[in-house]
Length: 183
Image 1 (tube, one colour):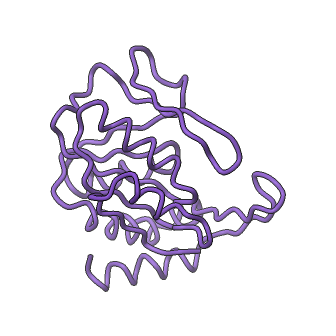
Image 2 (cartoon, helix red, strand yellow; image 1 turned 90 degrees about the vertical axis):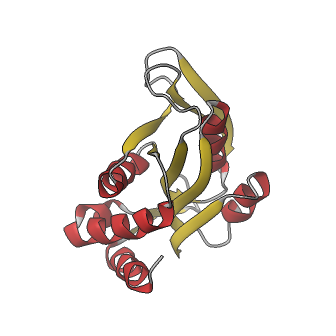
């Protein structure tokens, strides 16, 4: 990734990220990237930096929900397709599903089992925030089980003090994982 692209993205993230105390539960300081994505320069700079991290890919997989916004923008930037990694119950059957633990509960992700050819395709996985690594690990496991090759993944922000990066790289040691900033 080029230094100018990364610097522009980091400046936008610093300028526009909204901090929300005690959300979704007491003691958690939520880093809301919605204002970054709502700013045209913020969206453009974050998209460009994440697209540089993708490498040679056939598809971008955006994780529910802000990952959808990022995934679509990155896919357009790269000239490839996008697939939405959804929360359980949002897609018509049949689906591939993967359950996982969060820092404050559990969840399940799904992708279509029909209609999107994933076998052998190079997929770049993108999400907004990396905290404990559960969501990103589940998305990679889900796509891999469907036959995709996931060599790269990226997030806008890695949360300081949480083990997300280490957890993801322990499960996927060959993965190239990019985080634009920490917070």
